[in-house]
Amino acid sequence: MSGIDRITEKILSQAKMQAENRISYAEEEADKALKNLEKRFERTFEHELKRAEDQGKENADRIIANARLEGRKKKLSARQDTVMKVFDLVAERLAGLPKKEYMNFLCNLALPVLDESDNMIILSEKDKKEIGAELIKTLVERSSGKKVGLSDETARTMGGLIVKSGDIQINLTLESILRLEREKLESDVVGILFGSE
Image (cartoon, rainbow, N blue to C red; front, side, top):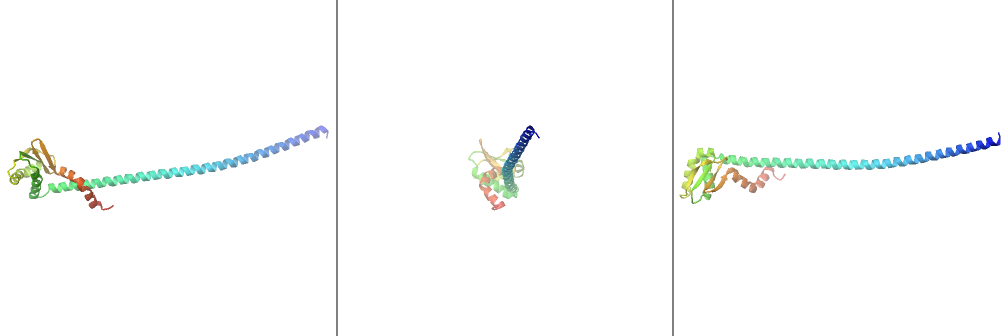
């Protein structure tokens, strides 16, 4: 082997060794980079997973809160419907009182509001036919001679009456009375119907 061959072989050997060292170093750096990326990925994954869990819990909490609110709204609506039915039932029962009791009830409504001038009583069509004349007669007798007449007009009501004196009308229909009394009585009715739910 000549000197040139040995020098060439030595140079090739050193170049091969340097190449192997560089490859080994590059592989080590690549492994380190891969491990760092894996750690970053795991941290990012865990962070994103936690964020997704938190967001999911937040969304679930919001859905549950909305469902509870809807439930409360429906419960309140059902309660209001029930209370309304109670007041409607009261109006029906008052309108369906036996004739004598109903006439006495209407007289007690009308007498305190009769004016000294002409008073016209407006009834529902049904009441006008069934008790109109008799009611006017009773009101005249019980009102100490006040002028009371039966109006040709009729009221769209299930019961009660309207007293008209000149341009003034006093609405004493069952619906009107119960609407006014509802504010005072509603909490009592709710307490009786639903207790302390």
